[in-house]
Image (cartoon, rainbow, N blue to C red; front, top):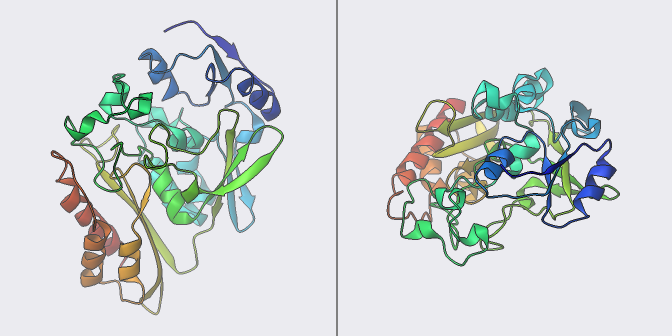
Length: 323
């Protein structure tokens, strides 16, 4: 690994000031599980690392208006084990618990999980693809068994986060700071698809820091589940995943939020599947119809057509577990 300066600011404002000094040469280090791997592979070559995990403004799980406020540097293990999260937003606790291994969850942060870069092997092996500023996605004609079947093109990466689908289903808001100014953004608008910008996965600018996630409490009468299909049982990314939250009254679905991971370049909200469920009793027929609707419009590549029936089955199974 190359040499770099390690900076440990004492406040969020100091950290943001460091980011604004030298564009492209200064990077944030929180949990570090993704960034340090990229540095080892020479995918990122910063001259300075600004460590932010120790900043008090970015840590902890606190009560918020109608829910919880979670600092971006909060560890995934703390979120998975938190009693308030399990009580008020159990879907997020379920998703956090599926990330990597206990060792990884004891280092990785919620902010890092949302902002991690793609796991595509062409990107990770430094091919001059869209993610490296090139003009081609090598997966289209190459190895693509783990790539997107929904909303792909011109890049066919899939977003690797487990917590992101859960937070989209929960209707969370992210807080973004430049050190002196802060803004809130609905998490569905935080992610950037390749049709907007093939080189990026989120809206963060070079001098901005994700500081906090505001998570509303799950609605009364709701049930939720996170299901993840992997090649291995642990320490793997999703072939497909589903974060499902269904609210019923008198046995009839009043609201449903179904968000898919591992099948699109961003957490994919399956609006057609949600529409199928509303106003119906959640039974086998409704769950199967929602599973089919979730993959409507899928465009698999040469080696990942298996993801279509797999995703359909995972959505159906997740919904039946809530029936």
